[in-house]
Length: 262
Length: 157
Image (cartoon, rainbow over all chains, first blue to last red; front, side, top):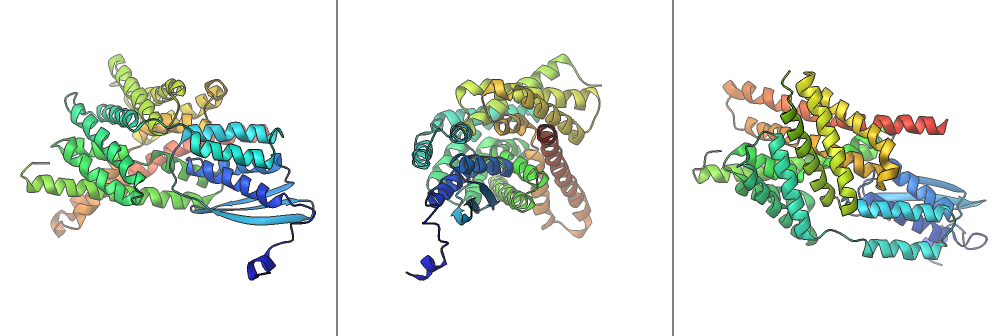
């Protein structure tokens, strides 16, 4: 028996299902967090999975980069931790996880079946194509531009810059480029393409990159009793905005160097 | 009062397009996108009425709009078959003051290269923009959270 085994609780006797149960519940929470949910939603879904699979007690700690769960049945209990990956937004996965949680809480699935369903959701949940997303983001940013009193002619460059910025962002994220660097690069490109006027360039570059869901989640988490996670999200939002503004600033400097007044 | 029907319709339509566009980015299914558009349209309609009709400031108008969207989503979420988090946040995305945030950070960058004489002229707008971003995001988040928190209290009783 090595050192790690000697530290493990004895959960192999009367409650052999604790380990897979804890990991399935934890994975459901991790997937939901990576799909852009707030702390309370994650708390709720992990409890549904764990209790639906047979746990009596569930305690969850949600951090920005990791989650830890303690579950118990009778006198037995274990604690497990899981790393959390890049936090994006994927509402279809979020919705599917809630549907699965409802089935698990009704006792329709075993732990193994739930694990298989989670794997299926992680790999098979459909996403919109890159081009559909790019056009949608372009339209959204053009509409943002109109809300900020950009004239109708100015919405054309905003649309194109936002489309190309979104395509570039997706490509960089696929290549696992750091999200902050990605924000600066996309912002730089969009500010160059958006318009000769800095206000329009700002719209093209920044509104595409503004992390709206994390910023609302940050406040929600703080209001709902998770100040540590909320603060971590707020700091991340602030740093993304700083990097995006840095990219915009580089674009502005370059345009000035080329003699284009911004 | 600067509110006209044309302005209201324009802002509402732009809010709907922006919310639906970001709905696609957030991987919401095509069948649920009209609900996102309705959510964004409602947010912008309320905010425009408060800003241009009642003369409120941006923070107060954003709070009222987020509160309205949060309450409407609580009432309609069973019909929309979409997570509450998605619907109310997407509706409020068009109100997130991204351009203020950019202006605030750019003004702070500019502070490093200003002379003592014009430092105050650069600092004041930077602080104003930063405060407006903070208060507006705070107003949106609080407005969205209140209906959820109230419902949870009622359910738990």
